[in-house]
Length: 241
Image (cartoon, rainbow, N blue to C red; front, side, top):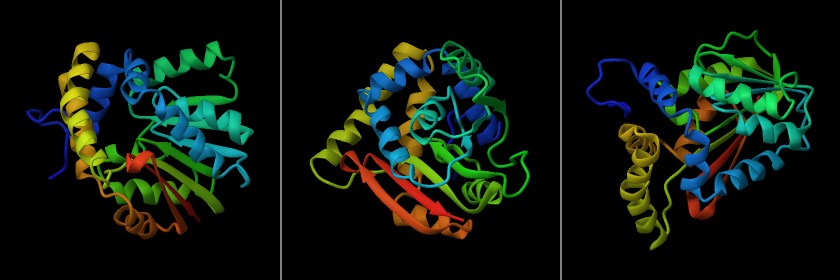
């Protein structure tokens, strides 16, 4: 069974995820950096640096949220254009304000859209990137396959996602933090208790490492690279079309 934010709702996972992110959009950036101790910024930079020597002229940022990955990609990869797509209008609204403040609204375009039904032609982007978003797909293979479709031949797909630490005692500490402390702080700040309970549940249910690489490969990507960061809390996956 698919892990969803609101267990008593009859809405689809996609609808619930959109509702959840709309609900927490105003506090999302604050909570993200607070709850990760700012390490999410390091993860994004580390991942993007792994592909900076490739062709990155046209970039699609899937599940862009408030645009943090797109902003970093603009600095590190120096593309001609980035299009960010997200299912939550609330998150995009915050993101567009950030782009205006940074004077990046012409360079980074934020669009409402479904990551599993992308409204772009085949072979449009040199690079497709996503951070902490594929875990929220209703159908993982469908989403990855559509990402493959819009990637140019020879292009790159970069995915940054949470994974499950395996080393003791860090594994036990992380479990305690993510299942007890994180939902408590998340509820306190965002007033949405479900959103930050959903996070550890969705990480637990998500296929990581070689299991994820199998689905990534099934979608069409090859020459897959896997790199774990910070004791395995985060994993970077890179695939080529």
